[in-house]
Image 1 (cartoon, rainbow, N blue to C red):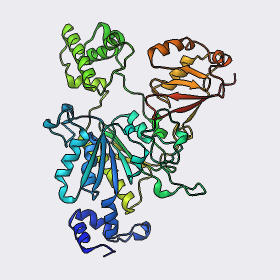
Image 2: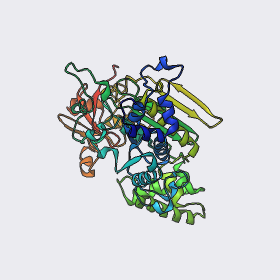
Image 3: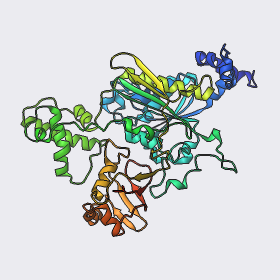
Image 4: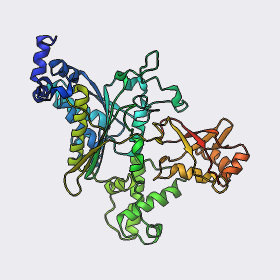
Length: 468
């Protein structure tokens, strides 16, 4: 029976019967998908394909469940968070007794217990995606990302000239140029072995909106290619005078604690939105301010939502996007149907509206262009180093960095941390780019290196001044 032993064939036929039926029988359109082999060999390949899921939150829980019920048995999951009480209303793999425990470990245990009769085994990893090197990611057939924030999704998509998967775990002192062949297999002539390309299936949800995409290295747009389609992050949009003088809403008190009181208490220290201690401090300060102004409604859950800019999750949206992602995983593993090319949108605000289209690769994408950025919009006579940093940090721009530090072969242009070193270089912020060029600090056309918390490795920057 297609070279399989009877025992194996019986096992395959007894589990995931519906999926097996799809993968083992022909259809009138077989000529349109001639790469598909409708057989138990295909079923066996799907069952043995090693799949990595990044994120075990609202979307990740759905993905793990759908993979387990779609014939995949060798599933791995990474998540850095622990279960919080606010997760329980929609992240259905968790229970009250799991609060404080690793999301990845709890989710894996739940699926393993529930789907053991299907031969499913989920392996958990508690940590950041940057904690694992290229060798770790090479073992997987494909990766599905169900992350809930843009920086993490950028990290999972960051690969140089789309060379293969992504550069998680690259040491901070290592250039991307040193890694182009670690995740891609090439022949003696430099041609890429297609089997070494790892597809990345990326999904995201926002209330009643969601999207799923198929990212194939060297072929499709990556996440950074579409970065400009995301608006700037929500910062509350509350006037500072209202927050300081006339707060009326519980959100006003929380924003004041976040933007004003935190800086006063911990100058120069950024709030860690994943730290329960930081969130608790802000909550306590906001609650005290709310009591002073007679405002009700400040609680820990609201504080968490305001600080992390959380948009209420809708379980049905997560389920729909997860279904799309896992369907694409099944198609890629079995060739039972052409895969998505390459972007799917769901718009559920006014009805069940969906759209698919091809998002083309961007010539200015930091990833697809080889992680080299050319800045040519600044006037060297008028613009200063501070203007350059503002351009790199513009939340609506193409870079969207947070705390960029810049250096050249000649030395440090500007450094953000530690505070003592930053102070030594702050005099440059008000200098024009021409003055810095004359001083030999940052010359036109000179290769500069930019590091930032949002980037898994370094970015090459070249200044090209406007001709006036």
